[in-house]
Image 1 (tube, rainbow, N blue to C red):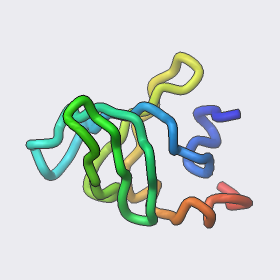
Image 2: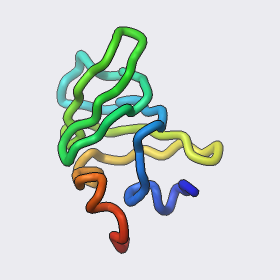
Image 3: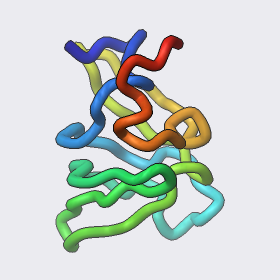
Image 4: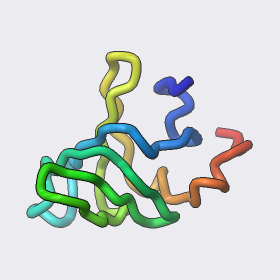
Length: 88
């Protein structure tokens, strides 16, 4: 179960996200569902198609258990399978 405390080490594919801060002002406010993830990128399904967005330069907002969580991308830069068993 995803909680605000364990979201950093949890599977993020399938979660809805929004970019709330970015060095690239053109993608601010971009919303969508994460459909794939690599160590440094998210693939997001948006209303305008699929977008590949780097994790590190952005702040990502997630809603978990009716609570909004904002995480800096540098905290998310792990390969999905490296998160399993990671102690935070």
